[in-house]
Length: 403
Image (cartoon, rainbow, N blue to C red; front, side, top):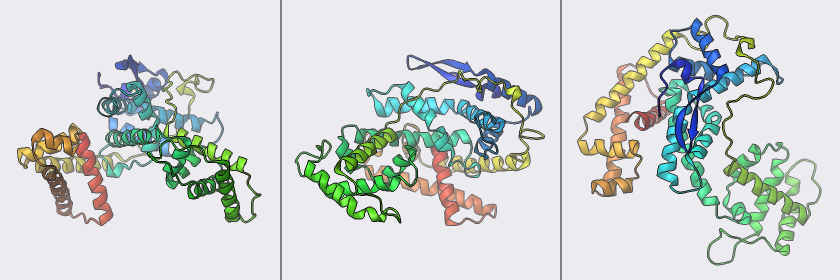
């Protein structure tokens, strides 16, 4: 894949895939004009500063409502700049996930790439510029774990019948699926109660596992409905009407649909054509909300420079510490974090016990974290347990992205 070097290109182009392979970069004209206009006014601003700038605008509250709101269009513009910027990690992690974890499955590189794109908003909501070396680095680490979780969950649920899935899903997962389905908060409790009664009444008895549970019998459906009716007064101050067996079955059928839609979302391909009347408005017509220099309202250049210098120092400490280790320990960390091998695979490749591999990984992390704590103390920075936890997260990010 040809990496992008120019800042305008980084924030205005999207990957073109042909037959599951990188073919080139597609230019979004409006995003390109946007970046060119901003760079004329602030040519000295770096790639990471622009990433933070668009991130802050995307995360800022919308002060106007309505589809034609200029503010809303500007927030959409910020979102699209971020989506363009994060194309490389979406593709690189997507391709590696397909190669290493999915093999000959039905999912193509393009499928996984678009899944990664779909997770951008969710992942960036937890981004903190003070605790990460950069937005792209943070996203690359987070999307790798997110995709693995998604496919692990799918592998578990794929062979399940509807009724087995209802017994498999956990309450927290179900609550998330119901919220993502767009249900009103007042509607969710009845689905949760119906699911709870189903699990209390329908206890599998057939041999050979529980992945293909049959539909409950009519007697069981009546028992589930009766159980729901006995608890329904707990839902609201005004007791809802009695629930029939047909209605409880409909609710649980809907629940299965909500869970499957949440666990198996449709792969929506990124559309950079920006069709539609509102989307065709030129960026010159969108007002500038950043007042003076477009970057000044978001970050102070001096503070950002100091922050980056500290991050560079921190990574320098990590590199020096790691280089002081013996070659075997360095190789274990390289295989674990860069090659993403499991401890079992490392054990087989290096011909050592899994206990030795695990011990060296744990001691290595402790050594690196200890070096960071010592470095902080030398700068007269006192650390509480929560800050040490964040430092540990930054260490994991460095190991996965820089090693």
